[in-house]
Length: 283
Ligand code: SAH
Image 1 (cartoon, protein in one colour):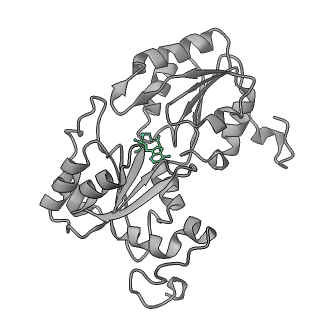
Image 2 (cartoon, rainbow, N blue to C red):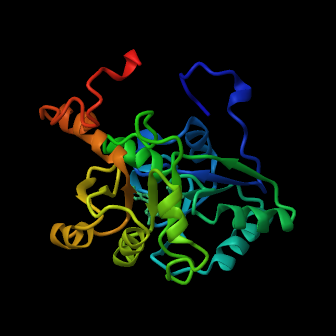
């Protein structure tokens, strides 16, 4: 890779013909690509990408063939097995293959399944992690996924499974009781059912919730609401997936940490939204 970035040569691995690199593209903003991702984009002969990968990111691989393998919202437009076998075929044809997935490839991205198929077919693989939407997307909304005054744990859940239904293995009552902060991927379709399950299990209807759509892109929208109002508020705001839904007190931190709003000239709404009455760093 030609670069002015002062890193030793071994920091830039070579994408050899016949290899597949399974790489996270981050949540959208090209600036959130890792250096390994850029290095991969520069070398690939073919990039197989998902629906959530932005055009601006593919532009980093002008020399490569771009193949869309998108799937959205439980409506598979390309079968998972077909995608995996396509990767195998391309690698066997001697291509330098970059499999590019939104966010992190191993977070609700079926990256594990694809990598497993490749290994089963003796295709050498490299995994390049990415910034997951449930962390980076919230950060762009000014919401820290952990915050010492709020949570010592965080639960990442998916709102639906491969069939498009809410995952039957999820015990919402236990999640509700055991999770200080929930970060829900793919939660829009079943948000009525999910929010009701959480309320039924004891979460307050006034619990803060944020919905962040197309996070980190120029189209990012953030809705601040509560568990009791989320369904109506999503409808009223006309929000559509992809969205990350965060449930918990950390959402309140946006009142002081909405850095994009502040960059646009807005004043912070509340310097101490958790009511601790002291600068956090003095404790
Ligand atoms: N591997 C991805 C997640 C894939 S599942 C990751 O680590 O981020 C797809 C879901 O991710 C979407 O339905 C949505 O819930 C979430 N998502 C991905 N990109 C997003 C973005 N830019 N803004 C909001 N949500 C996003």
